[in-house]
Image (cartoon, rainbow, N blue to C red; front, side, top):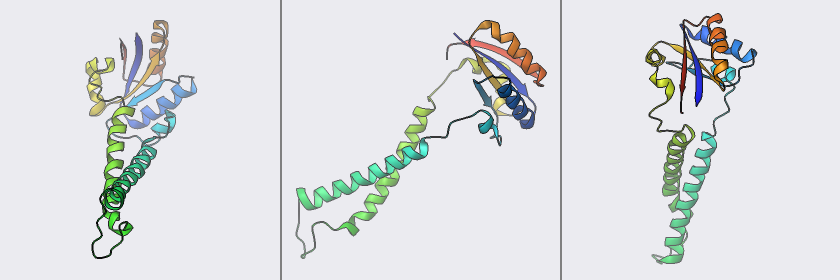
Length: 175
């Protein structure tokens, strides 16, 4: 059973200040839920850099190499046609399809990689059951602290109240 303590703040500046204060007080399992990106929040939450660009590069290079290999094999090895004395392997003729296949493979790798890395499709989470949490997609700025034991719930809630949270909620459930 996992537990979270959530605090709602009225402005992104207050959320950022509260997240900094929580980090300074030793809370490490923090998350934020905001209706728009908040500048500096990723650094405070110590989020790791995304691996999606590397995945896109690998997917694009793999798709381009695969497309070039298929064209070379079909034109020069499997079914060679000598038409007008042209060479069987003509690299400039393979460039457009190689490029387009690389772009398609990179886009597919990023699209599906994002789903896997984010754990999508996540249709339910215990935090979503909290009625007031709906404001996270409209005008509320929420910070959540994951706690291990039930005894830690109230001290964390009190800390959020002292940091200026207008509402503090506790949630339990299976992720």
